[in-house]
Image 1 (spheres, helix red, strand yellow):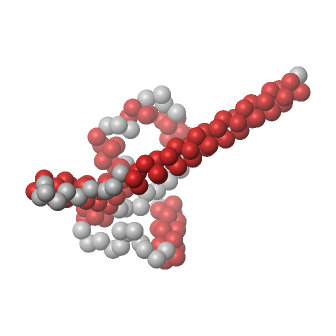
Image 2 (cartoon, one colour):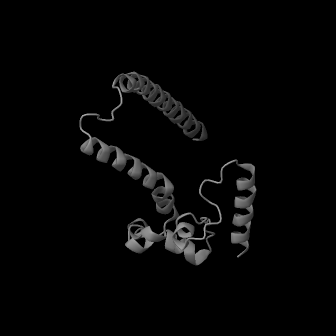
Length: 147
């Protein structure tokens, strides 16, 4: 109960400092409250920790009951995924009803940004691989020095 109070206090403090509460107002609808409720970090005692170390724990996360209870799934569904579903459905519906004036974006913006994104991903991959190699070399030196 004290952990929940700390979480609520943290939520109130951060929501007061932010300009937008991001759909966490005092909703009167029960479904909206369930979709946007605050998640609580789990504190493990010995019994919970033993259950957490089970090799079947990841499979148990995909049961319908656990998917329904998952705060990550709820936060993805509402409002982000619901908003994208609504916008894409309305654009597709508009394009099928009025085929002479199709809503579309120019391809030039995607080609320019895809080249830049490809270079960025390549640079990040090479940088991370170089850091991995450096760490592996340092670990090998540490192991050799300790022998």
